[in-house]
Image (cartoon, rainbow, N blue to C red; front, side, top):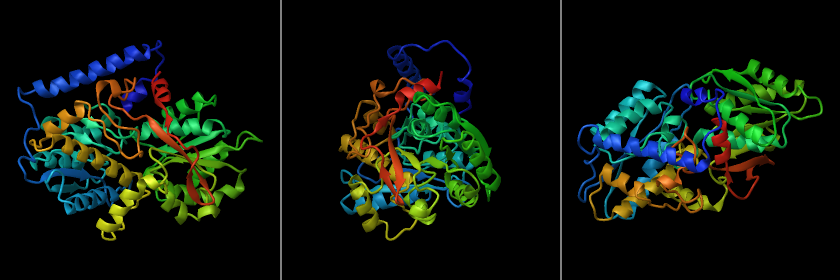
Length: 434
């Protein structure tokens, strides 16, 4: 992400979109070629052969002091039980390995090396803040990374990554667009980390696309136990224009809940402000736990990748959770991590069905995805395809194919759709680089 930040220096206007897309395609093609030519062999030709089980891995941090996503490996296990109960995929059993990356660089790399040692054919529906650490071992082994959560830039640069959403970049750009029309001063509270450094750039790009000025950038520790001082400072910054209701944007992952506890205690001492955030920092469970319609999120603007959890397009996933998760309370259908894992396994299943009776290897899965397989997710995303022509015109995110987000609001304690359709933020993402 530091590379993204460096691109903010003044520069001449970039090439027109058509030329930019050609540059993105050429860069990605060169990366693909290097994987084949590096050692004179094609990596990823082992694992999942014959009619034996297809082995994949899902990882995420659990029981750490920062962001945790235990529902993602739990959802992967439930998905496997579901497909295996129906006879598997093309008659093959789906076998899931899981790994806890502990939000640590070294452990994330160990998870990737274990995937290679276990001959998995893909890493699917996973979360890690350490993209550079885990992608290098995966690339060496030729293992595709399907449907990562999208928290790092590296996931949108590797030729072996197949993202299903626009990552944190699309969420923050979209939130800026959503806030631009109705907010006065905007105060952003975000982690003092490499992963947090790009958030103000993207939020400001969205704000400016709607004719709004930039946000007030406020750094905070990702693993703090209280945010009283940060909450008061954010409220002060959002209240600097009398007569205009400002907005406070906490983007602290799991610690957003802790911030909002401080925010709720201190907001009575300041003029009225509204809040804006992204899914992953808040969901319906958090809204309920903080008081519902009488809580601090009432009236908040929220940007997500997918339809709201109450949308009927999630009914199949919820049915699978009810019947195959066996009451596992780590799986929350409103959690965008769980939702991303469901969509990622939908992509894997489509790829395996396309392979049919052929040998299932990491290389075979990559070839199917690279050759233009179009995956329908039942309206949870636009149709997904990873051909060169599907890439957006962003040099910073050359593997991003889905720049669509959803605008949501909290009304009467419920997260509802603010707009019915997806909103495309490709232009905002491209402009954020200039």
